[in-house]
Image (cartoon, rainbow, N blue to C red; front, side, top):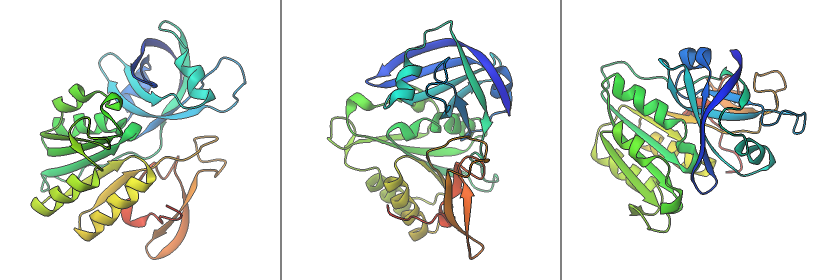
Length: 264
């Protein structure tokens, strides 16, 4: 991992309460893999004390920059949203275990995201395309106004489908409807998902029903972000044994069949 005091190259609201920032962080950009995250200090003071975990939305290894896409929904992200281009941001990363791609005997991949959970999926979809896999992507939002970076996602997916709960854009309803339709109609070799936990549980159940391996990227409240405090530990079943794994170290990406979906 690397500690950077990176210059803020770009920082703008791209939809209501959703910000896109680009930071000069050459070592993180060079070493990050899809699905990892960074810890961001949101203020120059010690209030709030803890950094905020934000998934890596994209990287540009040539320019040495990383992109973060985040939702403004609390004090910490509100403070972060007030930072201006040209200012510096204290970040630590890349952190956690990211997504892994299958071997080349598997060609068709399925990627599912919901809400701000789509953030790490651009990095994933770019790498999927770069390595010549064929991918279908299904992204779900509450409404048309909350759709994020659709043009960028279109560039890197063979088949992009959008759902909205209110029907204002794309197919009306939940992402699990077109997801099950795709699983029933086509032979996919791997499923990737990131979004609200209730969505991830449903995706995991469909993956098990259709006997397809599935990787889920999970969110958790984090204090340290490096595994020391154990505050983000989640119950898992690994090799038939119940254990606890840290979202910030053993995750945030997990095998969906190992996750214990409690209280969801």
